[in-house]
Amino acid sequence: MGWLDVPERVLMQKLLASLAGGDAPDLVNLGPVDAMRLAQSNALVSTDGLVAAADRKKYFPQFWNAISAGGKPYSIPWYITIRLLLYNRRIFREAGLDERTPPTSWEEIVAAARAIRKTGVYGLLPTVRLLDDWQLEGLPIVDASGRRALFATPAHAAAVDFYTRLMRDDLIPRETLTGDYPEAVRRYKVGTLGMLVTGPQFLLSMRSEAPDVYADTGLGPLAKGKAGLVPASCMHFVIPRASKDHAGASALGLFLTDAENQLAFCRLVPLLPSVTAAAKDPLFSGGRGEHPLEDEAMRIDAAQLPYARDLTLSLPSLSRLNLALNDAVEAAINGRAPALAMLEKAAARWDEILAQP
Image (cartoon, rainbow, N blue to C red; front, side):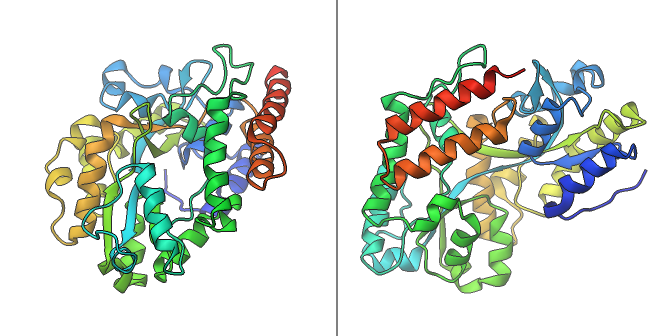
């Protein structure tokens, strides 16, 4: 059994080709969206029948069950990233803001963005993730049957109106509509964006590629919604149904993600473990000691682990659902129609998709 690294941009293409060709790998490391897609396509083996209950209990339950279909889990969770707020202290000073105090709520983030805009640069280039936003506010997406959309309400529309107001007041650039995270990263690295919502691993590339901005960066936890949760992403090991050694793949996944190996990995990069015992290590309260900013990021994120959730929805045809919602949201933010009317249209389309076998 060997290990093969594949570039992310071609990973799914190569994996699907190998599955179709009968030459499937035994174990694959995937992000939540791709892992969920394969689980829903019946292309993976459930870990329920492969992993003993005592081993399952070693993991944070919200991540062990993050990739599910038909009520069964389909992955062995690996490392976790929790989004936090980076801010440029130089830009904060130029905007008359307190560089020692990061915003702690979305109201404060908007106020900071308004002050920063007066300096000629943007304070924020957010990625619009309405499905995340609604869950963080405790708003339902679909009913218990998973067959009917529940987001055509004034409360849900308020989240769309939030971005519409930011766009109208020129507090966020047009790239926000395209979810242009790489553009947000580029602007932050060259010192023309006041705040960036990202994971702590971003600090690694910034330290080498933009040392001046890295030195001027402050950190803060991302503001919680009404549900008291913070968004997280977990990488997962999954076992293709076409694998010829399900038991061996499961054993390898458990070995790679055990407490000792996860701790060794987290000592190299500012990431969090999915195993509860590893998360209690002093590494996540004291840090590695080489780079204080990254140690601070780990401390902030480790404190948020109990509230962290992977918000990827376990719904069939998720890409089609997202497309219908994104089209409606773009029309609303661009002012072509009221947010509630567009959400009603998107919800009707969701009901059609979800009703399909």
